Length: 267
Image (spheres, rainbow, N blue to C red):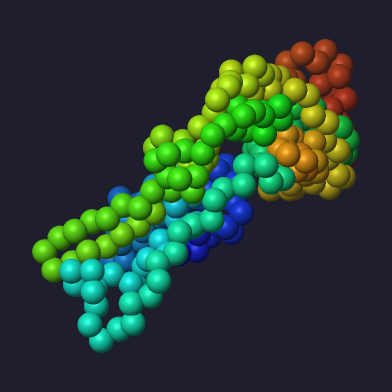
């Protein structure tokens, strides 16, 4: 099985934002219209295939929990010459286990003064996070799903002439939870998520920061569920905000010109 994480150059815990950023960079690098190399088109296809899997929550979950039947399929359900292994089912999901909040990463431009001298930089963010009231389930009480028997996945068997394969797919009835809610969470209205609007975060930019410098605030972001820690929030300095020189008075502009001449030797 192809390693989609290696294809995009990210680790297995990469956030959706990190995956999207890596995809954008590589798709531009290997796009056939930009890259005349013979291998570029094949690499471009691999990058798109990896992104199509890792950018989709259900596909990524299935990819991270590979088919336990892989390699056991034979002709007509029996493979002569090889041992017929016992089929395993995935473990039933534990919806009450602690889960840490996901990382949020933002590229941003900062003022010239902060870029040179460092200091506090404020940013306001809106984002979705799991509902702490119901642990992200959308309900507080539920019964075992009768379609998947509480496993969250159902077996899908594909039969073709002389070939049979089986795989586990997320249960469409319970959305891979293994439980069907018997009530609805009053906080998130059953969605399992809530929206945080325009929340302010304060970052301390170090003196001597560069383009690409990252500053991270730990355990202040997305809510952790069932006792899990809050996620971290990070900014990456992508550029400098253009200062509005026009708002300076003529004498201030002349002072600035003189200062630049003294520092640089030229304007």
